Length: 163
Image 1 (cartoon, rainbow, N blue to C red):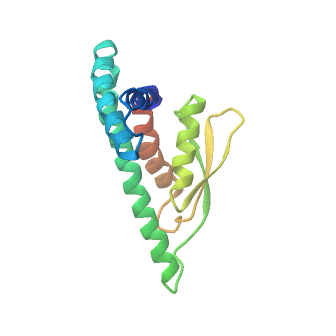
Image 2 (image 1 turned 60 degrees about the vertical axis):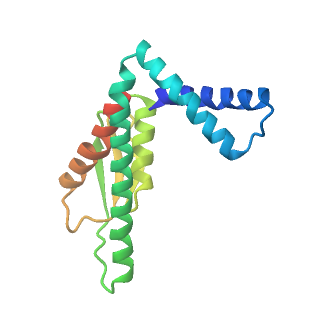
């Protein structure tokens, strides 16, 4: 995911320079349009140099779509539990074994887990092999099921993008 940030930043800088050179106003619409045009030129050119871009972009889109799907579903589950008279929440703490090794991978994974309602990243073990996660739906799911969903969902998709 980090591989796309320099291209976006460069596109914004070039768009601002282009708007300044052409004496057009740097309105939000102009800036967005010319950033998109310049990015649309830079991205295929960078693909000619590095073939990884074509492989990683669909995986990045898959990660984003999956994250937003999980975010919506978790919000619905928590909202349902809040408005019903009986609670279905059963909190637990699970030790999630990590395949993520770099600081960036661990940070993004922990943030995606924490941003999803019903789960919260608590701590990283000293040896960086386990991420402790607080989950509130333990009644319906076992700890192993929670670990499996986090590993095959967030972590697997994240590692496909970053590696």
